[in-house]
Amino acid sequence: MKKWIILSCLISIPSGAASLGTYRIYLDSEHQQNKFIVKNRNSTPEKCDISFSYITYDDKGAKKLSSKEQAVLSEPAIKRLRYSPKNFTIKPKSFQYVAFNYRRQINDKPAEYRTYANIQCVKVDEQLKKGITLKPTIMHSVPLVIRTGKSTDLDAELIFSQIKRQADNIFFQLALQGNRSVYGDLILVSSKGDKLKLLQKNVVIYPEMKYKDFAFSLAGFTEKNMKITFQETGKYSRKKLFSLPLTGEL
Image (cartoon, rainbow, N blue to C red; front, side, top):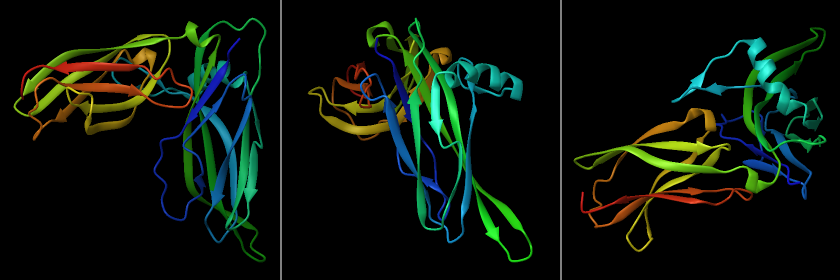
């Protein structure tokens, strides 16, 4: 039975702060362990730990949750994980590997479980006779998705809806139907399938969001029969392609 984890990270890293040396990590039945690197670019040690949280979504965006709600919703995913180390100190100008493993469960039904692995690092100033002082730096919140069951048991369809065109601008919604998340890029392509413009990269839509609003300028593109496509990306994604035909000229 195919079981796999997607670990993806979309963060902005300030200069000098601890950073993650990966964009995404995937684990499946053939690759049950993977690891990523946390780098300390500072001249002082950094003490890091890993915790988990959960973000839920309404139709259009994120909803804030209490600590209790966070714990309840994160629990199904965390039960399926082993990770090491849980906390660590990185020496100056050094690094630490963190490994995630999928914990198999008997008779797991096909499902998608999500949580966020929060990797928080703080600077450690070791001052003689003054003890140890911790100074906050940054927390990396890494979206983590666990999918159980065969890949064919989890699917998604994207439907372009609420389409409006005003002058050189186009507005639409991407409505998601299915039981898995989708991740990919929105691209303007020609009638022959050639890429004309990358509209938005790294778009993520979760099942409970139902839809997401988009607006783009297509100024300068007047070719007939262009399309806006959503191309799934990622080594273990289904690589499905969804398209919105743009008939006529803008």
